[in-house]
Length: 294
Image (tube, rainbow, N blue to C red; front, top):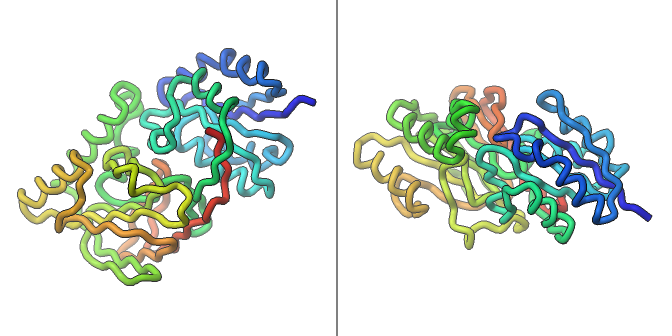
């Protein structure tokens, strides 16, 4: 009996190379004895709607798009009431989550990895009532994820985020933030903060793989203090380039849940997608709720 596969494709993600390889991808799945249904997204949020409505009808849901599209598919699967396994063919500009998972960017090879792969449980974040797959962030590098033009992202990928993030640092206004976790309180003036389940943070900051476990029930949290001098700024830039955050400009810790409060409403991004401004938010780690094939 054939297995059923739902392929959800974002046709405008990144360089669109996955769209151009759509026949090859579909053929690989068909040869693996899948009956493939392909649905193309038409607008932001459409992938979530598709997955929510149809994931329970399939043995496997495959997302073909960037990290934002994957976020939508994961959200839809969780809302569908059935934990259908998910495959990911990354075709965005930077693909932070794919990098963490060790997935390849070549669409055909990514499809083959899904066919040959096994399910791996991963943690998912809950930001208020909104899911995120690998990062919730605010501040300097957060803005970079949506201020870099799509053309720049497509042309130079990861470097686009670095360029925008570093450019912002000297001019960004710090935010007074209070972060409460089961283990204590972190409070201060910060130019950037991230709650992640990834080795790549906002396309710019890289964490060493040995400190990140995608299914350990906790987030990695980074808070970057306000650089008041050129020396402070140099320390931040050095840490970003070396992935060594052992200096006074960074606070790094782990938490399974946290509440973030700010004096004024601030903008956040979830998996690179802009969110409305908010003053207080509760964030939880949902341990092992999604099964990713790799």
